[in-house]
Length: 138
Image (cartoon, rainbow, N blue to C red; front, side, top):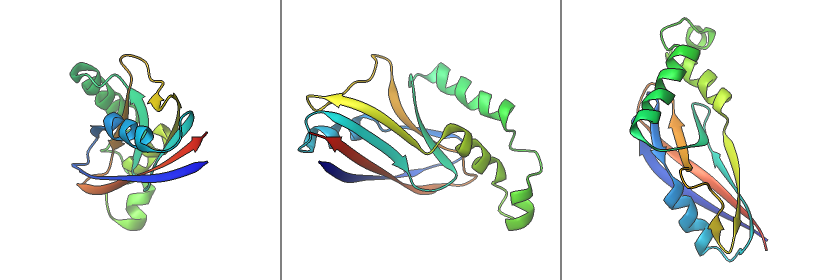
């Protein structure tokens, strides 16, 4: 069985990190699927999904890592082509990835104690975002 659900929300951009664990868990629990996997997919090319311990210090470390790895203040060919100044956000999102698969049993996500599901919005402006969930199993 496959159940598709959507989660919509707004972000601030500029490495805005959003904890969506509760929303994903609620959608899995309310589906008619007892055990299987849920694929969490973000639509758009300037944001990604992952897991992290959603704690202030680590969130700051995560943002600082992206500044070191893919600086926002470098010239990007995408910016020359489109003039929107968000070339770095596309590169960051592609490195983080646009989807994540999480197993669940008895309608409960099998996440670690300190593991939360996050969306990282790397764009250079506020955005409306949509997560597509594909809940698969029996």
